[in-house]
Length: 495
Image (cartoon, rainbow, N blue to C red):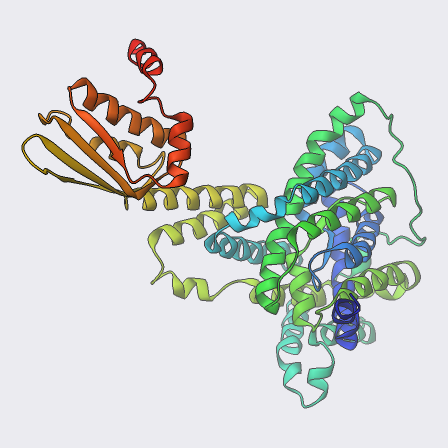
């Protein structure tokens, strides 16, 4: 236990503290922007980002991953806030946390193994595009100063690491933010700043139970929103954890992450914040700035609270161009450029799944819909591929008997092909069906086997099934009807 504590908290103290500072600075305008999207006061998003980052540092299953208020979650809150107000949003946030903890105990995090690599790649590319698109409002209808500062910020981010010694010690995004802020203040450059995004809170968050009636009517109002928030939050968190796993070459506990996200959302709902989840953009900033342990998430949350409450006047001076430069860097780093090259050698089905995931996420701005479409397509392509690998070989032993050898997987997608592979008009006294190289997976497959046996018997042919493995025998014995005369009669009567 002490060894794990040392790895998570003490193995990268300087890197985690510096990365946490960069993340905190980048979180501020995003938290304000997400609050505006949801239709609530900026402090709701800022308090959420603080509390979620701090709680998840202790409870999450993926160290080095940043969780806070997010745009994907904010989009789901708009109608609830507009129709019922902030207090119902806080109640929905608490319920979201409860549902996520339940998902953790049900081990729903294990479902991530059904998400193919092409879906993850599409998810990553879509998020990179969305992150970049989110910066466009800050780059349209602005003066040339904004473009100049954004380009200068990108130059600092990409060139600073090449400086001897110091380039490796201090994260370049931090130098970008501090440097451009000092420059804008010294020369009084007229550009949009963090202060223009909205008022920052000047007090610490306090514990408050949501002011809503505790009855069935309230539950019916918040439950649909809480379920949607829980699903999207867990989906984005699980996908982000998978990406960070790859970046850091480490593994994470997905079910613990589900519970951790739940505890974080319960906490934020009781502290006046909106629901949140893992953030791919901020997690990428953290990793690229040298953050690896849980300390980076804790530091980000603490820095954020200290800065917005006690250093507000200074914080308001940060030019948005500096933060835009950081987010463009994140967008470029997040996009899987290799996936474009790999499209030439990957199967068409893999490319379709990846592109469909990208298209759906970018079009709907709903990560859950995009990933669902990707997983559905990947499953259909996989089922089709496996079904085409099933073959039935026919060999006539003599004029009165025949043998069919079934090879491959028989399930709902290959059951029709299985049935069509038999010649029922061939005049034979006996037929042997060898299933030693086959596996029957579902009720549809068993039903197809019943159909074959019954059709042969109606033609007066004796049928013998041989070679069934234990799993196939179990499902055939349970659901098959060809050896149950009364069931066969019912089946034939139905025709």
